[in-house]
Length: 171
Image (cartoon, rainbow, N blue to C red):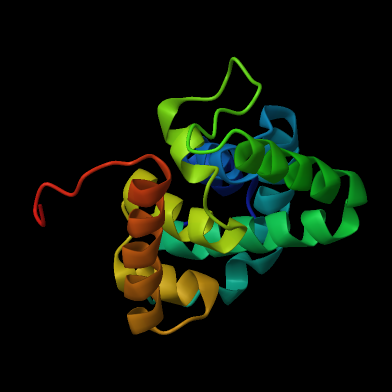
């Protein structure tokens, strides 16, 4: 376990989880530079709150909760970011079912996630990219497990409908 407030422990915290936190924030924000800044902020917040970690649930779940909160706080502070996200959403709507955003750095996953709301994206990334359980996600976003399951189901349906992907299980 990490020793309280020692530089070696902080380095271990960053080393062990930096990649996962940065990838989560990159997928959530769609902006590599912003994600890197938010990851640094997240680790500073985590360091300050390390004594508050109770040991219940996974450490990465606790850390992603801080990352998600850091992202939301940043978004509220940044009017420019809200405008860019809105423009991207309008671009996706204008292009009909293709939803291709103007960026060479977007992966297929990013294109699929672009049709989802910010909260849906966060939950899907936590589930599929970060491998968190429904319980861990529920704890991270402060919602009931049933809501998380519903959001995941509806998000998959929204992606299938937007990209005309057939569900092989149901037809």
